[in-house]
View (spheres, rainbow, N blue to C red):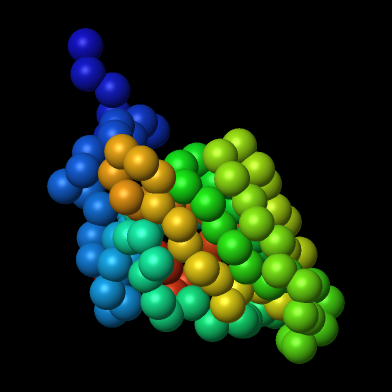
Length: 128
């Protein structure tokens, strides 16, 4: 018996879509109150700028590789934090984060990050 695809999503390499930033692929799954963005980012991919979300909370978990980034209450936060597999960050609404350096793992040469947004971001919703 197969599951309704609105409730169950399987890992599918073809479901990851290229973005307008070279080396960044993502898969977005949006629910009523939260959203999952599964990033697969090539080793040393460029294009991450420091930013913040006014009305959205973001929780990120690194699964492969490493994320070297800045996070804090001020846009000019200088301290960098390095997260590896299993490490998590949370950016409450208004918290600055980004200016990231992505380090790929040995197997895929990618950094895998799961970002959860609540409420969902309109700019990440799939276009129908």
